Length: 582
Image 1 (cartoon, rainbow, N blue to C red):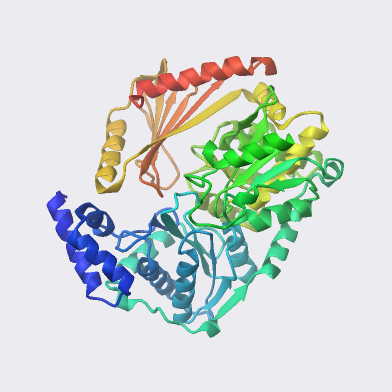
Image 2 (image 1 turned 90 degrees about the vertical axis):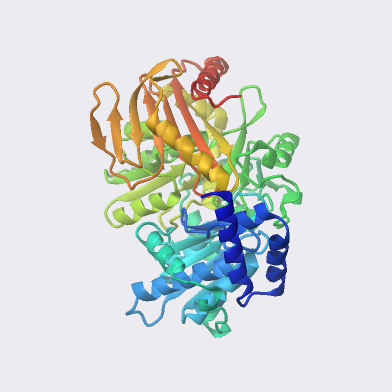
């Protein structure tokens, strides 16, 4: 669509909003756009926010393509209409709502609660901000049919989001997500939203749920005897201004850890995230204050959670006693190795256990699973697909752990989304277990590499903002799909896995086989030496992601730096081959 057409479409949608019942601040913001900034007008109104990976996410402001009480309202009314159709026989439909520390999160949560109430639902609304995994827990605890958490996870401060959940406690998956989107699109104007429900339908919940949840987490401990001996493990934790500030220290204390240090300046709940540029534990800058604290007290492990406390990043001391940040794949390997080792030691492996990881998460986890003869599933990116596997296997097989490379882990069945609260506790327990054997957590990781191979992964993202950026990303994917390279990093391409076409193409023979996963715009290139490159547009941010996975043998701990450097260079060569370097 040409710019003039986009501008005309945006103007028409903006005028429609002005003619409706909107508040004065929104009305003034729209008038300013119409009078001046055409680019802002287009980006705000050229399209509508749609359910992506579980709900809405976008920049806050006026417009159909922005997070505001009206787009939140239309999403909630659409979800309400769908729930009424799905559960017509229920006398009472129940929903739960949680929210994080972001600007407008409480406003959006209360707006959502009143709309659900206006549709006749019983609403459980947290009294203050809570972690996303606790929302999943509450849905199952109260037997709700749905739930919503207001959060934009780790996105910058100008973003907010709306994640919708189903009755199993997992995020909404196909076909429900597509059907909810249809219901939302069927709402043609804001006046169709029932904004003013009675307070009598809304029940406020709080500390009593926290205690039940934390008690359940404490039952996950596999090494209480080790924690008794290593209770003074030096732990530094930062909530990065988010929802983990209360429950993560609470969980660590319940597990038995007595030497937990927090970053006071980042204990303050603030949607402007004043101490960081971005509250993303994947980024070293977000953990800088915690690293300084860890160095000061000579900590054993550093833990940092994102604003809604569903993801955790960690740092440990390397062989030179210097703190390094582990990536999500390394942390996942340590977590899986600990869990499967302890399950075997305790005689808990009965032959029907399983684990789940996403297709862009390290193959090292699959190797660990094979060692213990554990069934593993690969699923599309998004923890909702891990929850979907858990629902399919409920009552048939025993779940041990799920992971995605973007710092998300789940070690319990009573929650159906990634949970940084439980992950912080279990990772600390695993670090205590390693220390009890006379090893640092980093040495434990090197031992895993020596056994299974040194798997190294890196993620690169290219940002493309706005409508023009979306077009650029689309063209990049088309080019990689239609013109795959013959070799990458000095190794011949042997497989192309196209998850949009749902088939694997073997380059030498030309044969193909079906990929039994839902369609998704993801490509994977697999080379002769086992290198895997995954390419996918983000479902929540304006960027395209490139995942690089390479592997080499590690014969001794002393060889770590040498092999690490070689693998780094290999990834650089691959990026050059794909023309991703300047």
